[in-house]
Length: 415
Image (cartoon, rainbow, N blue to C red; front, top):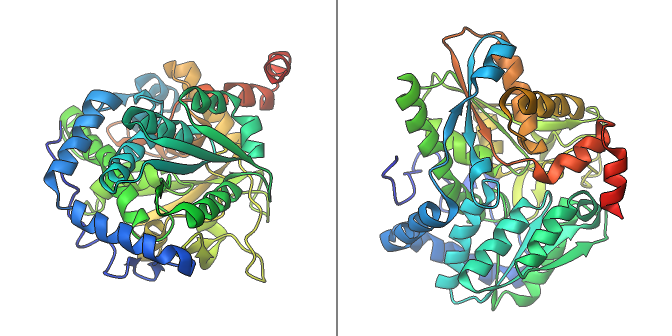
């Protein structure tokens, strides 16, 4: 498997000295946080060239997380759909069940290097919260996870997992009680405790250096997938597909293919119920540039610039912003950003279960839905690499409720 240890060179695609990707990125934080953000940026700049740090990171991924994750040819799904062959990058097989652990292992090692004994995190679907709590337990750090009260309801299993791992889970009742509100609460905690606390942001968002840092920790996905698909098919894929909320799983996958001009890249957002205000989370599809959570990026906002409510069947995609690197790729035209609605995601969720015996999280089910549509119009010797960024145990009850299949079971689990 890939012998890369330190992060890949990002001279062409990475941020400039100000932490900006073209027009996007930057450090838009309160004055009380500026010293902490600057220190983090300086520390990370040095660590990017620190081979022992990356060797420890790689060792943690291999021996604790279980990397490399396999690239799986979904031949029965491919046969049912017709057209291109679908290959699933199985991040759902990582320890904790998603790609999030790649980033939390890296950031927790970084926190330890900085002498900080407490970590905090936000979480939507709960996977990042579980991964942060896991890494904190692994390295003996205190951990607090902020989670919107609505997401606590939807993701009770992950709340229990975090608590079993020793983390304190704080339900946030403000706003829509989802991911954006959890981030707001985590930011307030960080402002008050940054002298001894590291904020483990879960996606390629926030002030510099977070977008670069999280993407670096997640590039292991793309580096492995690129090598694996060549080994299995003898060539690069025609297309690469991943879901996009904040955008870390997609950034980690896409980065390895950016210089391959013949490989089309598709980021799939949540169209929710329909592309109307408050009914979706398709930021790059219908949003416009603005400031959110310390970064200049695309934001879902009203005419007065107020952040819009969002909706998705998947708790991990209902975010009104997106990582600034994705905003930059959109403007460059290197990545195509599309959206799939709740119904399409649920149908893809069911189809993958029935054809491959794999239960996907509802987040990558959006990517599965789009990949199936793309495959139909392609040839049988074409290939699509799809990032299956997480497993769907956490979503079974909610999906069953929405599909009308397990109302009684859902009621008993809610009791």
